[in-house]
Length: 113
Image 1: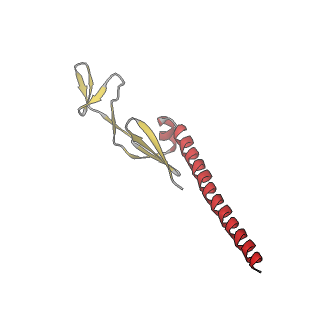
Image 2 (image 1 turned 90 degrees about the vertical axis):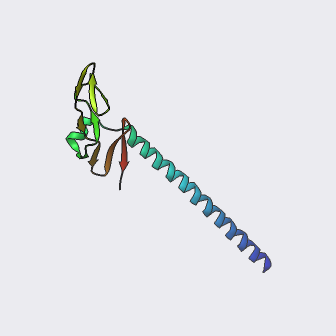
Image 3 (image 1 turned 45 degrees about the vertical axis):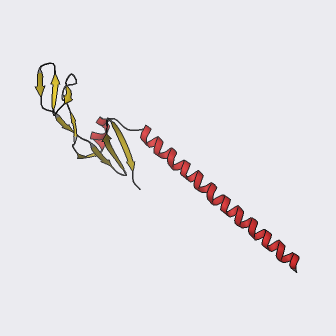
């Protein structure tokens, strides 16, 4: 009788250990898949022209110069001795389940489910 109880306890301990192992292994695999999906989403950022054609611009906080020769500084666009005003470009696009935000010179993607 004691021998049967011992085997039952050993089997239960092994089952719990196996279950714990699969739970932690599953979390690690699932987390890796999420990280890969986020990395792929960031690598596949569309062009700004595509965003204008297919998404809604919800914020215009990005300052830029209309002409590429000009450089933005101190609230103006400067080229040699010429000053002009800046243009407010779209800084945030919303497309279906993705939001594209301009952040320090690059587009960042936030995926919502």
